[in-house]
Each structure stands twice: as structure tokens, then as C-alpha cells.
Amino acid sequence: MIGDEKRWLSGGESQRRRSTIRRGSRLQGGAVSMSFAEVFCYEHEVTPEELDALGHASNIAYVQWMQDAAVAHSAALGWPSSRYLELGAGWVVRAHRIDYLHPARAGDIVVVRTWVASMERTRSLRKYEMIRKSDQKLLARAETLWAFIDFATGAVRRIPPEIAQAFPLRETGLRPPPSRSG
Image (cartoon, rainbow, N blue to C red; front, side, top):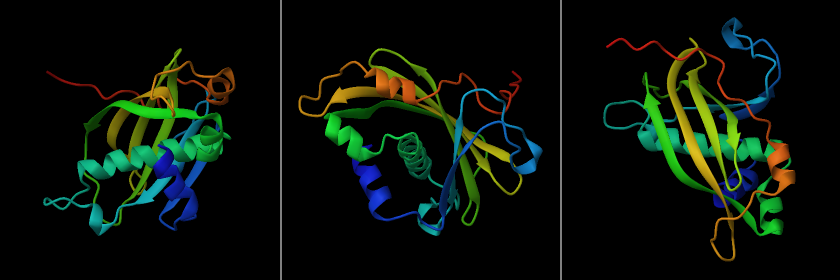
């Protein structure tokens, strides 16, 4: 996370990437963010370089958007890479899970909505919804399990209270889960 955040911060905010925190506000298409914990919204325009052989955004692109959204959310809550470096500890990914529902194509604006679903002693679960802005189509649902580590030793360590308190918790996203027929 730290290396990607350095790239994010050193390059400035791209015209293709915008982020906001939503609090009980009306969203694109009339959806309303509930007044639960904050949901961070990160926008990204799909580039031709992110497409796979089938002409839609590759799996790698989705993981990068998740990473970018998580890093931007952390920075927006007062925890940019510099603070983690000063602390000598920070987040690393343990696992990703992505359910792909519809493809994203070049030129699509994808809104990555992300929130922290749980914060345990040494790890945290972050969830995501990736939505095409033009038609509000849910493209993917995902989650990342993060572990908090000491940078010098690589050992897992307890999440400091000031970090845990900076990230409001929210169990679910803005849309109901899709019904699955057998």
C-alpha cells in the first residue's frame, strides 16, 4: 500500500481519478447513501491500456482500482503513507476476493465505493462496490483482508487505537445483495 500511495501522492490527482466521502447524500442516479458510517467514493476512467484481449477491463485493473481507492480513503481519513512510515507500521494485503458481474470498457467512468467492514486486533476487512457511473450498473463486488504489520520486522502487530478509530465501520454497501437463482 505504501508504494502505491507514494505514486498516488507524487503524481497529483489525475483528471481520470476523483474521490469523495459520502455522508447521507444523494448519489448519481438517485441512490441515497444511508446515514451509516462513511463510504468513500473513488472515480476512475477506464483506459485502453487496462483492457484485456476481450476488450474489457482486466482483472488486474480491478485490483489496482481497489488498491487506489483504499489508499485514497486512508489518506482522506488522515492516514497518508507518511504517517504510516513515521509509525513504522502499516497495512499489507492478505487476500482479495472479487465477484465480477458486468464488464467495464474503455472510457467508462467506474465509481469504486469502499468502506471498512471490520477492524479486529491485527487485521481489517475492507469491502468494495464498483459501479459504472453512466447507468449505475454494479460491475463487481469485492473485499480485501488487510493485516497490520511492523515494517522493520514484517511481523503482524496490533492496530493502534488511533488508526482503528479513524476508520468508521460499516457492514454493508449501498445496494442490496443480488438475488441468485439456482
